[in-house]
Image 1 (tube, one colour):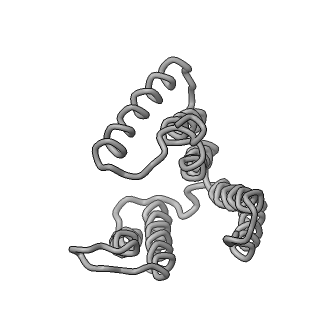
Image 2 (image 1 turned 30 degrees about the vertical axis):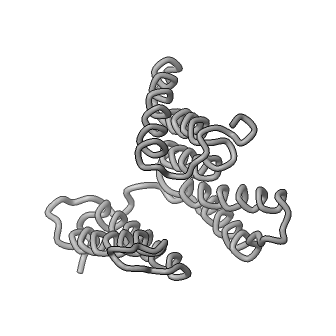
Length: 200
């Protein structure tokens, strides 16, 4: 079979890869049931749905009437190789309870750099800058709180765009921070720090 749509081919592979990743990583946790969900339930179901969606998109790459070349984005070997090496190092040097806080922070930084480099190997600058913002949000949420982590996410992601306007980005950051606090902390009751520990 011949690949007629390169975008669908790569999108399908990406969806299936992320879905399988969610399923594999969540196997270390309790599954639970639909009524009493365990920590593995949501990522496993979401991962399975991504795999199915990815398989549909992947199959469509061979039968699509839209013709796109397989090389839809540039691929850079050096960031991919460095990101893969750092990812392997981060995997085999995971922090334990006996490790100090400095080791844990170093491991988090190493893992984040690895993820960003792997995505920096593909596509334009905006792709990996937005991803860097999401990775930073995940790592900063606990130590600096939801409000400041949201500001970091919006400002870093906006830097990946074609133009950056301070007033618009600041306004959007304030609105999203307020919405996040009222929706997730006040509304859903999720146990998140709103501000850094020393401010609460």
